[in-house]
Amino acid sequence: MADKGVLFIVSGFAGAGKGTVTKQVVKEDENIKLSISATTRDMRKGEAEGVDYFYITKEEFEQKIKNRELLEYAKYGDNYYGTPRDYVKKMLEEGKDVLLEIEVLGAAKIKASLPKTVRIFVTPPSAKELKNRLVSRGRDSAEDIEKRLNRAVDEAEDIDDYDYLLINDSIEQCVKDLHSIIEAERMKVKRQLPFISRIKKELAELNEEE
Ligand code: 5GP
Image 1 (cartoon, rainbow, N blue to C red):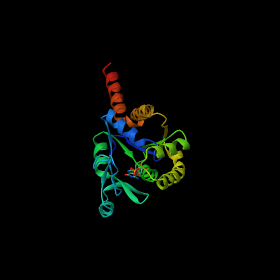
Image 2: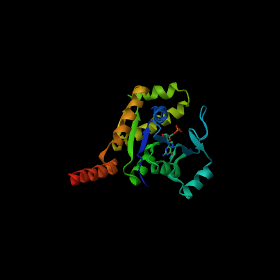
Image 3: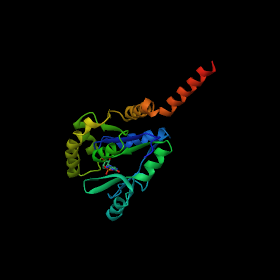
Image 4: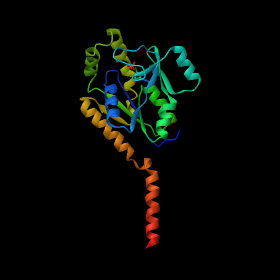
């Protein structure tokens, strides 16, 4: 895959606020595009087709797997979630940076096939705060909350493999921090090789003229 743009992955515990943070960051920076995943889960209140997800059936999802339309996919709970390959490929080729908000297994698969991917993990400041947020958003049943907290124990094992850790104490600060990571990554020497070869050439020409 051509990689003029940078691929960023944001993962985190359910309730960490990663959706709010990523949506705000793409709103503020038009050079960064948020990939919309396909899922077999039901649409929640307040969500919209093509905005939060592409909602498809299990059969449609399995067809996409067969057709190699997904860059990665994973099962989360009883549902499939996957990243459409074409959109990500097109944006990176156009030099846009792409943000994926996906869970840890999908993130590991992408990192293995595209090693320059930058992975960022978002967490609330404490486990107690994580539970409070899940309870207070009032979206999940007590059983679901327990499942999500159980899953967080496994997800925490993968944090060590990530490049950055964002502690989401305030959404505003977290958005700023994510911008900083994105900008610093854009300035990495290894991502600016065309500039470096140009300035070397210019310097050589200048010296020849003198
Ligand atoms: P939710 O149902 O709460 O929207 O998402 C459940 C989990 O699935 C979250 O951790 C979210 O980051 C993850 N997820 C969303 N889209 C994808 C995807 O395309 N691939 C993978 N591997 N995980 C995803």
